[in-house]
Length: 216
Image 1 (cartoon, one colour):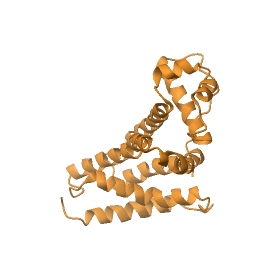
Image 2 (cartoon, one colour):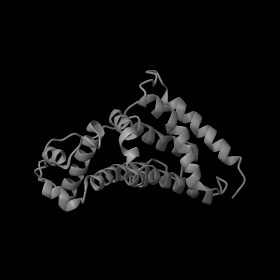
Image 3 (tube, one colour):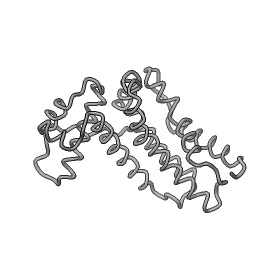
Image 4 (cartoon, one colour):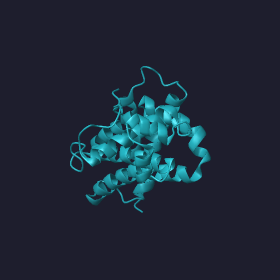
């Protein structure tokens, strides 16, 4: 299974728009948070890696917490944008669209640096409740809203019964992600694990269950 790796550039881009330089800073910061952990990544370390001053970073972000949340938000926005570009969104059968979106989600979750970030986060971010809530809002909740919108679109065409689609999206992500992610976190994900078979099973299980529920 292919995985999407964060680009690792060194130093500040010599050209490009301010928006591109800002995105580069966020990508580099997130790469550091993922590989070195939140506690061990200082603003000075980020500044040095990006080739900017600490003052430049503090002019944009009030704290390291804000920088982490902004970096995660940037990553998730790119992921959601990729999902909105899935071929046949709203036109192909929901099972096909859901499988295509699921590949993007699973590839991101099982990316080695993302697994490392999850592992670090279990011990670090859990002790920072305000940061935890902020990370959840820009990460999982944003993906859940995207999926809920997809479900609502198919329900409007009469292809799904009306439900609490945000709750349905949360449940779907748990079915899709929890098992493989937990195995990856503990280093016990089988080398021959079949991602396509897992996606097909989860899509069928979820849609069959949703179709059998009464309208709410």
